[in-house]
Structures are given as C-alpha cells and as structure tokens.
Amino acid sequence: MSWRKRENVAGRPWRGRVRDYDLFKELTIGLVVVGLLVVGLAAIFSSPDDPGVSLKSWAAEAPSDFVATATAELGGTSDTAGYGPPYNATPDATQHLGFIDLQSLSGVRLPIDTANDFVINPLKTLPVPPPALAQWSAAAPVDQAKWTAAYTAALTAAPDGDPAQVAAGAYGPVPALTGSLLAMAAGGNLDGVLQSAGLPYNLDYTPSILFIGDGSYFQGLAANAHLTGDQWGVMNETGDTPGQSWLWLFSLLYQIQPFKSSANADILVVSTMLVLSLLLTLLPLIPGLRDLPRKIPVHKLIWRDYYRQR
Image 1: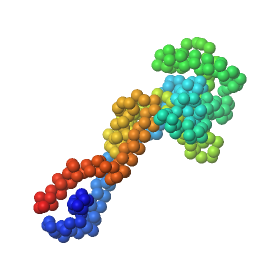
Image 2: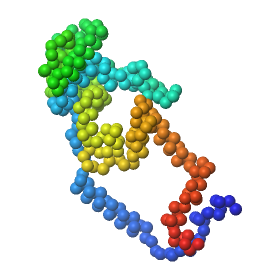
Image 3: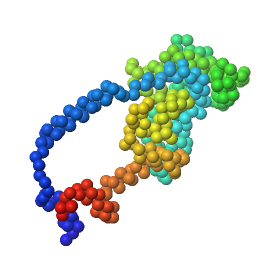
Image 4: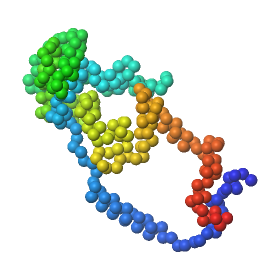
C-alpha cells in the first residue's frame, strides 16, 4: 500500500465528537467585530500623514544641499547622471547577474540629461532668464566640467557648504545658475516646471524625485524615519506606525553578505526570491522536500485529539 493510501486521513470517517455549528452566525459576528476594531483603531491611531517633500521644501530647509546637488547635475556627476538605463547610457552602470543584464534590455526609454533637464531648461522658462545661461551654453564641455568641479570643491570647503561663504575662484556661470535655480525652487516654480514637461497637467513626478534623490537632504529624512536599506526600511513606516512585516525576507537579504556589499544587490536579491518562490511552488513535486511534513509531524500535534483516538 502506498503512503498516499496509508495516510489518507481526509478520506476516513470522523469518529470524534460532533456539535452544531452555525457558519453564517460565526461569519457575521466575525465581520462585525473585525469591522468595529478596524474603524475604531483607524480613528484612534490613523495612518502616517507626513507632509510631502518637494523641491520648494528642500530649497527652504537645506539650501546648501540644493546648490551642491544642482552643481552635480550640471557637471554630470550625480547619481542620476550615472545611473544608466532607462535614463541614460552610462557605461558599466547596470546591475547584472553573470551574462544576464535585465536593466540594459529596457534601453534608454526615459532619457534624462541632468544638466539640461534639471537646471538649464527650467531656468529658460523664467520671465527673465539669467544671463549666465548664454555663457554656459557657449562654453566647451571641458570648461563646463572644470567650472562645476571647482565649485563643488569650493562648496565642500565652505563652512556648512554655504554658497555665500565660498571663496573666490574660477567657477564661471555655475554660482549664478545654481543661485537662480535655488530662488526658482524656493518660490515653488521649479516643482511645476519639472513635473509638467510641457503638458497642461503636472502628472510626471519622475524628474522631481530623481533630482531630490540625488541630494543628501532626502536621504537624511529617510534615515531619521528608519526607512533606509540598512535600517530594514522596506518593511518600516514613518513614525511608530507598523510597517510591511511580510517583506522581512526581502529586507533580511540586504543585511547579510554577499548581498550587502554587492554592486548587484538588487538583482541578486530578486533572483534569490524567485528561486525560493519556485521551490515553494514545486514543493509537492520535489522528492525529499515533499516528505518533510510526514517526517516532521506537526499536523499530529495540531489534530492530537484525532490521533489520540487512533
């Protein structure tokens, strides 16, 4: 007799105690109780409602970081400028697993030139564009790179990175451009310009998110709220609100080697989760693994009354 027939518990007649059970009544009570709990707890604790982060709030709360990031966007040294597909074709910027390079397969579908898209073109929309635009546009790329590199170094050396305390130097039009962009952002105009992309409605938040993400201000807000990767951020929420606990395995992989220090961490984690999910799906078909429930009889502990009668 095979193990399937020998252990066919579901096909055997029940010889235990029998009592009436009103499933409809149980369901109704369960829905009412759970519904009242949900409404009551939601009214008491609510959900996180932190104010949104915008270019305007960034410019007001961390103007030095805004100017430093705008300089990096001009010089093409920001994270977005070197991200690779789908924003640009930066060489060797993609994550890959052996010969598998999924990021490159998408191609450059959302092309972003950080200097033009984040700084130059928005400044051109001002009623009176700054004269520094003409000097920047007429300069050779090598001169533009020298200006931005020099100004970045000067900002780093200045007290608190304050542009007002930068030592004199050969920065070309960079201080004027970044200063004008700071004023534009502080007035709330830059958010609308980046999000509209020339369309009547502000629906595309990608440029704003990328620009804000290139600075340290947004990263600091995430760290304070315990939302960064090394803080298990993917399963956290702002404040004391419970987060997404079911994402613990994803987050765990980012905390251990070799994932933690790998430049290809994302694709390694996703690949590992795909393999584990496939193993779970095919568990009934894998010899050895499918026998574990019989070898570790937890079910006999759960239905101990039945097996005690046997």
